[in-house]
Length: 136
Image 1 (cartoon, helix red, strand yellow):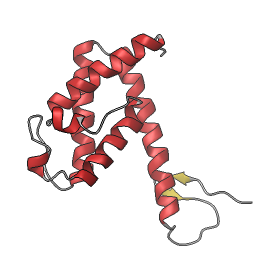
Image 2: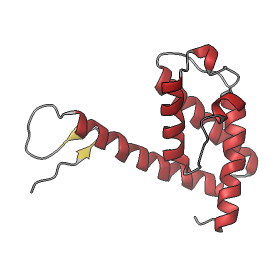
Image 3: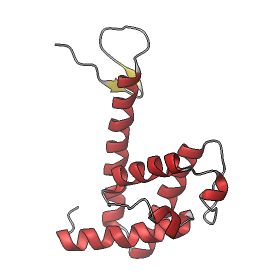
């Protein structure tokens, strides 16, 4: 059996044309894993304040991907920018994949801006990693 891998978002292998949705999904997952590893490395060496900044920027980036082409500021309200229940689910799933922090869907309503959700995620990340004995 032949497997296809992706390099810089381009499939390698048999040279066939465009890949189906499965290949795109596999690329997205591998990119998320790579991005998640880099995020974990940055968070592991960051101070609490830097961790909050990193998480806020991660929320903004993921939200911009979900709501493209909307410009997202630190204090932009998710719902006022068009976040729906479906896109809220996508946002929390993406953030959980990147951070390995369990995020209840209600967190989007309780922390409705990138700054607030970033603060929540930074605290949750610190709590999870202090319980587990943080590893670098």
